Image: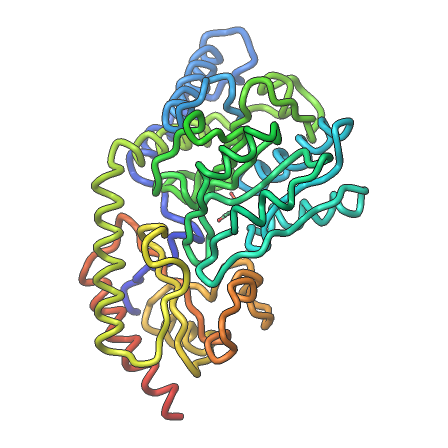
Length: 381
Ligand SMILES: *Cc1c(COP(=O)(O)O)cnc(C)c1O
């Protein structure tokens, strides 16, 4: 068996040991229900509110603007449907982009069937929306604009602050799917004029099945899940205290080590790209060269079948992804690669490598060496 070399941190990450350590007591010793009255419940409640404070602080929000959910997908659903339903007396038009995660795209498609109208903005060859196209798409009845902070396939970081300026000036609610950006980019919801923001635990060394929706005070959203009155009556269900504690610790760790982590990932990416350029001909980096997530390298290999390449890499213990985890298993080119107009000679041979805090230069050397052999063999077949 080869040692596993993991380059798919945009798909999920291992729980950081310090995160796990803080979570563990809440599975057993501190098992109280945060809504009950006795002392073990009070410590669960305290842990819940401490985690809420940590999340709020990381993005410069108020504690009462943070709602815990079951993950990024639920946060996106709750933000988009919840805001659309609560504001439908003001209009029924929503603007988003062609490169959103399926949690946003499918939610918008469902709303279209329910009578909402959705505009899907184009992106340029690097994955950026056009601010003028956004301005022109806004209508009298536009109630919500949902644009991702950073793209999960190609890593491009959208001009969020400029979008916030536009939406606040027009009094339109601005939601951003921040699942990939959180921990990798500094985020200030006040300065960036963000009204709603989704995040997920498992993409930043926290546990799976926990997420956060930030909603600015004064913005109304309808709850989607009925039952108990948890989370200020906006999200029913006994709180996942262990998960919430993990989320709070993960985000605190990400920002207390922010400079070190992002520098490390950027160095690995730069080294990987330099080595690739020297050793493998006819490749292309997708997404923007500078405004990108520090650990994301989305590479197209000309005249290579990506699935075959992934299979060969897996034989060597290397984990990477074909565009996006949600697109694997289908032979359709990903909607993101289609939206950036990637030339057809590259469409099939595109692989996403996403580096994390646990990767080393040695991992990259191993990866480049294997890539060089496998790509040469596949091209000579
Ligand atoms: C992973 C991801 C999601 C979904 O988050 P889950 O916690 O897995 O439901 C949503 N948006 C983006 C951009 C993602 O990368």
